[in-house]
Image 1 (tube, helix red, strand yellow):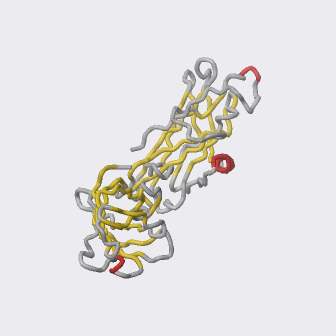
Image 2: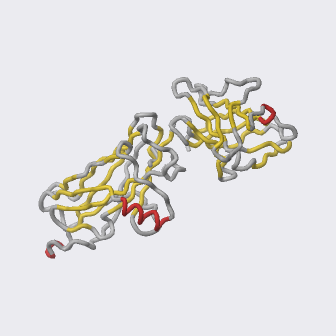
Image 3: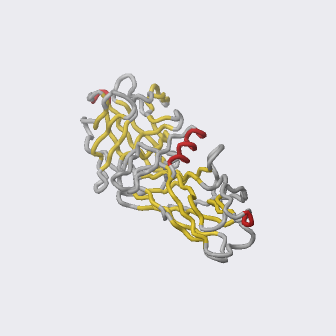
Length: 310
């Protein structure tokens, strides 16, 4: 999801490319080839403030079992083109990821092999300067939406030439969104007096937090949570301790559960009039009725009209 600032994938798989022209080497197998450096070379924006290069890809909307792809470019930086086929070995490098996390204050984890994979051996062909290989991300049963994933890929060996000193490793983070994710206009009201003032036309993001689950995220507050009406035409921040997550049946789009990801206060489906109508309609409008403390006098009756993707 783009706000995951994984989000791997973020998820619409566009090409990730790296840019560098570094000639520094860490291997000195042949001094006569001192400029024949092999590196990861992509033209996307480096999101890492310092140290190992980092790149983020929003992989778009995926359903269970779906896959998305991004490109990894391996580059020969010597004069002209490669004088012969150059075999390059790639590997997942957890040490590089730990270094990246420390330098940038992130907490990325290496995804399971069932979630992300890439070729371990690639060849830069004679007469060319670059080869492109495909990394594949799959929304498998092992995909954990509570984790921030990133692939730390490193060049470990080359059949000729030298390995770049600074661009031998790069971190590819990504985010995935489900079909309920997006920007909506929220309208509704709370059933508790004196906070039962209607609210309307509030920009709300429904952010992916599970394969078929989305959480209310209020951009004005910069947090997961839900606004509350406090007067005619006036709303206030209800607090991040009340942060409902909505779970859908992907086959019927009916709401099967609502729970609180923000704290200990229990949240569930509203049982009063209109219950059972929480669903995503054909026009992507959501009708979500929920309550807290198992009390219909603490209910929220929400309508969310789809605006577009995040």
